[in-house]
Length: 271
Image (cartoon, rainbow, N blue to C red; front, side, top):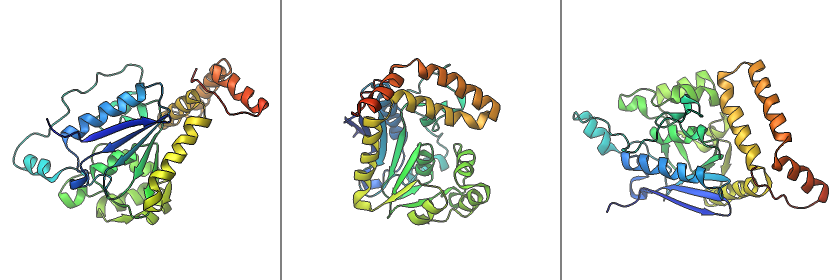
């Protein structure tokens, strides 16, 4: 039996999903791809999970595609795809059901804990997280142009939305390495933490979401924000008006008011 390339555990309302090829800096393989999608789907379906943290085992997040996989493609082999790709969900936007860009369709927030090198396909995966916390030792690179490749798997759409058009061109054309400080300055990551404190700080943030925030509100807000690239202001406002009326009828709204008035911790149910 092959070793699991993705590990998952749940504690305190947080699903921690870990890319697990530490001896290869968690280089990406078809097995990892399939296992990650299964783990993310399971976490999203688990009512006990309020937030998902994605990280890498050892000293790296993901160094990109495994070079043996790329060498096989160079030799004429077809790029492998997961054997058990999920069926198309008519209730979720098709844009977010593509091969790697499915994190936005999950109802739980996904926080990337970038603990080391994050390159190529690893960077693509990190960009689809809702938030990115980076170790101060983390290094980022698009890598593609230095392998004779192009802007893969939707990064040409995602990256400019985070860092702007010209910065995205710089990072994609040069494929230069970017340290955590620059990544934070240009908006590639949302927080930089001391390497030895990364998981503590990321999990503390996730635990606060799990304990203090309505899971229903998080799911709706996440969907609203990921839908806005396809909406006008008027359309986004109409959606917000509809969702506000639905929120007024929810149990979480009643609890949100009650715990504030009663000066106690909230007991949100997601309903």
